[in-house]
Image (cartoon, rainbow, N blue to C red; front, side):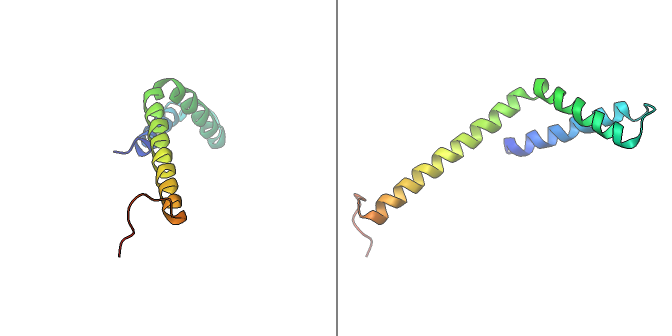
Length: 87
């Protein structure tokens, strides 16, 4: 599973757990949702650090790959490509 998808599913799970914990507090629905969002956000800072690091690494790898491909295409269009043209 891609790290981005895994991270988001884990965040959603943390939110569901937090909402379940605050559901029975004598607060309004909006207050319960806000409290669950804050609690799950804080919990994710500590609990999901490794997954968040994998997401950042995956994004960085993708950016580097796209930059290399863009530079290769630009040099090929400029005629700086070392390979002979395809006929």
